[in-house]
Figure 1 (cartoon, helix red, strand yellow):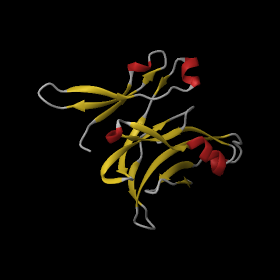
Figure 2 (cartoon, one colour):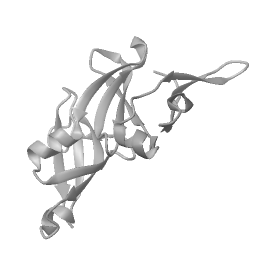
Figure 3 (cartoon, one colour):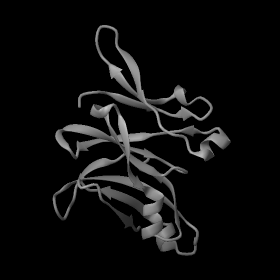
Figure 4 (cartoon, one colour):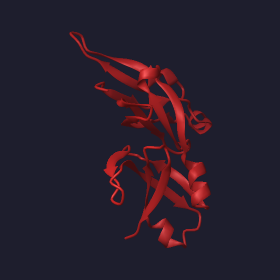
Length: 168
C-alpha cells in the first residue's frame, strides 16, 4: 500500500515499548506506533520479548490493497491478518500448533515463518501462493525422516494452508 512498516519486539514488562510502527514521510519524517499484540503468559512469566514478523499479501476483500500476514513464534505459534485500512484490525488466520497437531501428531511448533512469507508461484497450478518455513520438534527423535526434515507452510489465496517436507 506504499507504507513502510517496522516491527519491534514488545517487552512483556512494558507492552507499549514495542509494536508495529508505520513511517510518516514529509518534511519531518517520523514513526507512528499503529498497533501492538497480546503477550502469551509464558512471555510475561519469563519476562520475554514478544516478536511479530510480517509479510504483505493482497487483501482478500480488495485486490488493490494489501494486508499484513503476521506471525508470532513459540509459544504463541499463530498467523494473523492485520488490516491497515481498517484501523489495523487483527484477525487470526491460523493457529499453527492446532494445525500441526491435527496433521502431524507428536510435533510441536518451535517457530513459524521466521523470515516471513515469500511470494511463490505454485509449480503445479501457477497460482500465487506464500511460503514460510516451519521449525518443528518431534517428541520421537528416533523417526529421523520427520525430525531431520525441513518443513514449510504454504498459504493459498483462499486462506487455506498446506504443509510440506523437504528430505535431504
